[in-house]
Length: 94
Image 1 (cartoon, helix red, strand yellow):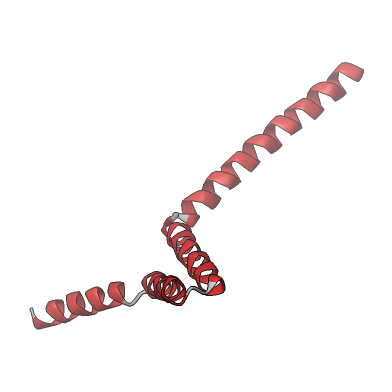
Image 2 (spheres, one colour; image 1 turned 60 degrees about the vertical axis):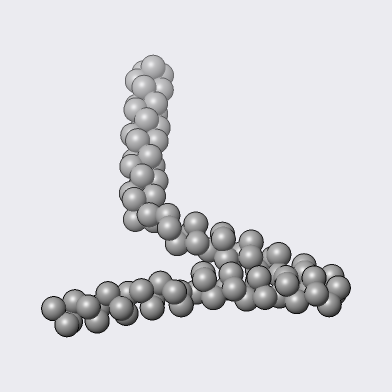
């Protein structure tokens, strides 16, 4: 039971300190600092970092294995259709 509790605690800590959260916090810090000091470049980089961390979250969330399997299946279907089309064209010429 103690090992399960340790795994849960590590999992929670891991989620709190994952790269997306750290980037988001850095972006928010830069944005707030820019607003407080009135520096446009800090605000710009804050917005860019926040946008990047959100994009990173969605990219990592996507199931890439499933995506590439779908792409390969579509490629095979396309190749099969092209093969049938070529065979049909060669059959018509004879």
